[in-house]
Length: 435
Image (cartoon, rainbow, N blue to C red):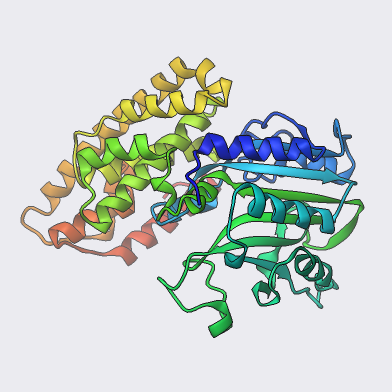
């Protein structure tokens, strides 16, 4: 397969969808509009919910775009092969238009004939149904995958993983996803074992169709939507990684400038340092996007996410060095994201100022916390729950950082005592009472 840049992959996708009758629309803000069910836009379909439910009329039934997304549920997994806090999604939709057959045909044609994936390495998953909720198995998608030429042994029936929604409520439905087989490096094949290892061997490269048929209510019940629609999507970074036969999303062209800077300072000779470098690159990139949209670091709700991302980057860095230039990383993010998202360029001065202030403030607190840690453990190889709680609450030291420092210095921690104090504090904060 040839080498593709991220920008090439975007261009091929948009041109293909436009050629097949889709109207290109701008990506939405990562801040949801009139959608209290989401902290951030977490998928390309999230801004489309009003179209799926019939509350608004789309400019055309068939649409496509590139959508920046923030997935807060993935923050703690960042640092592995393919999880990211912020990613870009290639998305296409048909609102009360075509349905399963054309969606599958378009996905297969695009992947096989325009991106050049070997069809022998493509697998599709389909929904197996849910009798309790009276949702039938998606036998139609199986038939359509076979009709485009996918091997029958490469069609995998799954359950909950193939029923998708963008939040706790709203439009949802069964989906069919496409995976790429990376080979025997990790585990034996699905055909040999009957186990579909989607964490290592099989990498998801395309959601060929979420078939929007239901509206999920707050109590979890499902009602039928007034009409059927299709939502498709692919994470740009994961697709770029797979197309170029790279080992992780952090090896692609998008992340290379960040990784070059961080690896030069921290190094990459151990798994721990590689993980740290990936976390810092991802978190500064995501925080830059969020702050550019006007969400500044704070204590609650959306504002807590950029604060968490920035502080985690600093604490991860502090375990290895105090020489990392975070402003250089922010400038990389601004320059890169500005190409497709003008709001990043327009708000760059404010973004730099906000990030600088948050970084400097927390670095000062962390330095004081580290001083307190070493003072407490100078003649003692243990910390009480109260001492841990004080380091966390007064000095702003994340528990994970305290644990890492303790592991490094061979200090024993009373984690249970800390958890008890933390829970007491949480209950007091909720009720407004004092001890």
